[in-house]
Length: 294
Image (cartoon, rainbow, N blue to C red; front, side, top):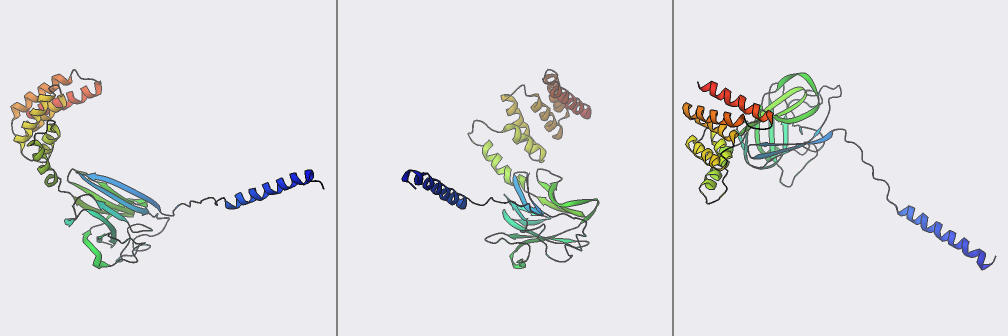
């Protein structure tokens, strides 16, 4: 065999070796399997407090859950897989018990007529299930009363309802059981010092309207609320939505005549507003306010 005949064969062999080497080095495809209990995250703001819950959502799948899969009287991870976690950006109260800002593992002890709600400071620890639970790490324990649902909740659900600026209800719902836990935040204590400081400062752009409404909605100093809404209207004299709310503040302060005047002013401006839906909304609101004061 001549050199000219050998050379193509050598090139073919070298290419085959290189291709085999490259295929051998290629990583195996990465497989992602679905979790039996899907992970979930729920975020909710209450007042100025940010709350987040991270948990896995097991399903009923025809089983008896409480008193069966989840025994009564035993510590439960309040979900599946890794223990459920809950975090608060500020201090809160859980069924009346003080809870500092932070992140916690969220355990429960289910019972037929009473549940125990447990928060443990996370620190350096995180655990699978509740197998490493130790009561000495508890930050707070409170009790809650379960209620029976008419319809089955197939997958565990943790969420919030009854939202207000200073409170909400944290709900644990699964199978036909719902466990409501009252959550409170001191939004007035958090915000009032800040509002007062800003209003007393040399800051040229002050939050007159939101500050006035915060004082109105939280039954605080209505004289200041009126002063601030007037200052806001001095900057935006055609803001009929603000004039309407001035009427609400005056009515709450007991000045019915002043409230009617404000509502009438807002009504006349609203009649010229666009789009039509906005015009109709504020015409209706002002007419209702005037009727309630006469």
